[in-house]
Image 1 (cartoon, rainbow, N blue to C red):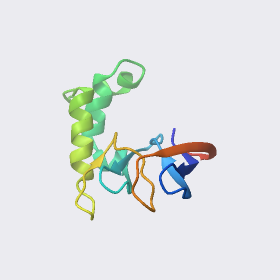
Image 2: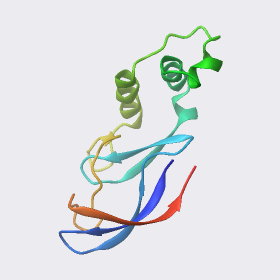
Image 3: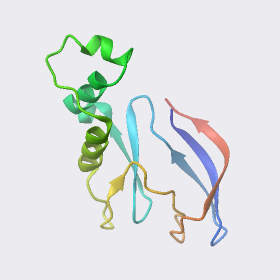
Image 4: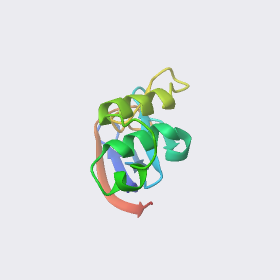
Length: 120
C-alpha cells in the first residue's frame, strides 16, 4: 500500500510532501537521476503482471493457475517493469529502488517524517 509522507532535506533544509511505495493497483517508480515519480498501473503491464502473479506462492496464483501462461521470476518481472517505465525527461531511468530525492536540490539526504495519507 502506498503512502504520502512529509519529508525534509538534510542538505538544503527544504520541506516537502512525497509519495512512497506502490499501491494495490500500481507500482511507484522513481527516476534515479532527478527523483520524479511515475505510476505504472498493473493494467498497463497486462500479461506481464499475470505471469508474475502465476509464479508467486498462493493465494495469488490460485485463480491464475487455470490460464496457459508461463510464470516469470521476481527479478525478471521487476526488470520488465523498469523497462516499461522507460526513461525520464531528464535522461535518468525510472527504477523501483531509486532513492528519494529533494525536489529543490536533488540531494538523497532526505528524512521521512509523518505519514500524511495512505493509498490503495
